[in-house]
Length: 164
Image (cartoon, rainbow, N blue to C red; front, side):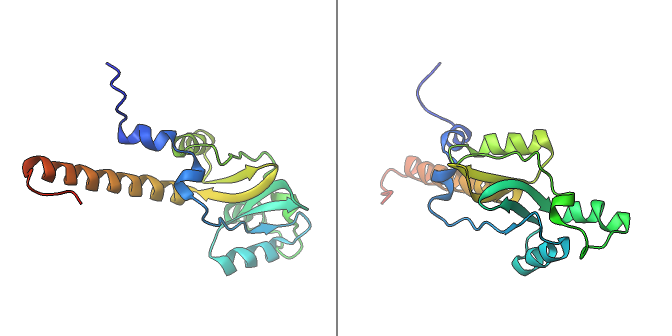
């Protein structure tokens, strides 16, 4: 029974990231492969984040997180000042494009066990999505759907009330 009416989940599924996040400037905080882990950690602390893309010039070379530091430096009694980002970064990076949808991104994160997705457009990193960003988008979408349903319900129950 195809009526052409889409569920809220389907509407969210068909909207690309560009529509959901608009022209909001998505900050890209980065480190270079030759940076020390200490300087990368300082950058993360300065911006209140736990993840950096690693750029070699403008090319995505990898990603590094606080978790990488904890497991590959601190727990191995290595020095964060003497260890380079390239020595612990993840190089097999899962990325998305602005045309991906929220459900596609959530599925990728779930399947790969990751919490961040660099957004790459035309070979350039244009943003980073976190699991928190995606959760926020889903919650906002559902809240909007609920408000619209409540308005529809009020209008149906009281036809004298205008929806304007």
